[in-house]
Image 1 (tube, rainbow, N blue to C red):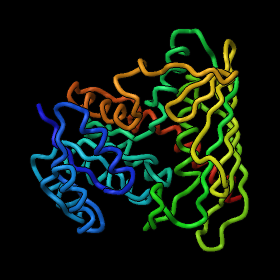
Image 2 (tube, rainbow, N blue to C red):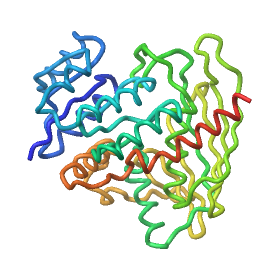
Image 3 (cartoon, one colour):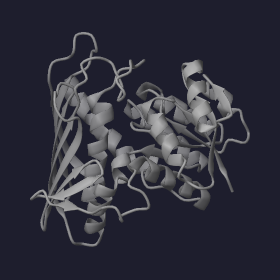
Image 4 (tube, rainbow, N blue to C red):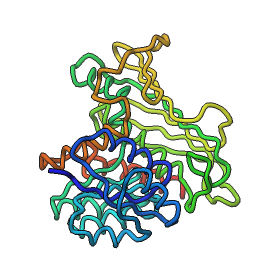
Length: 316
């Protein structure tokens, strides 16, 4: 069985998925959807993709397509996920699942109704560094007492990871905080029962807060402190400190260190060191095996309930 895939969004993240899929047997990207037809055609030519369009509906109408990966602007995620499920296609949507609780609720409800595989790209669950820690937790060798996380960018203009102009505005709460809110509950193995947030000034043209601080507490007593900024002129990305009962771990993307900065070899944790590829492998395996994937929309829904609660706090 070859799974035939349509990929929507040929930007920085879409290309990461295309690169990862090239390493996965039994999967073929047959349709590419993006706003700019000329640029999309150039990406399609590079990756040998036969069908190109600017309208997702064109791809959803293709009977041979089994699954869709959405790497589109945040504001489109819920609506497009619903369209994929209504068309009978399995769907993986990049983080965040939605930019509102209502959107997330609708996708989770429709997935349950259709029984199709619907997964959200909470990549941290798949990064080998975080998988290593998760395996220690599952084995009963490590329990989180505190996570200290920094998500930092220097992004005072509306640009993407490649420095190109964006057609939409990114968001610290509904996008970047979602990674850590979900990962904390997943690694703690316990739901979040308390959440607090404060934010800095609203940017005059972007209309979003450029700095934010979030505190979380899980039912089992573990706590998390998350600092986010679009103003940080320094190393970019997200850095995690896991403080536990038996060890301290520092995770920087796919690299993992002890609390004393001794590097830990995570090259054998999974079949790849690429978190996006591992995420895609889980999506396609779930389709072939007819099962719920790790990071299914149902599993990550609680994250969006927490984000909604935090948004209400900030608006108040």
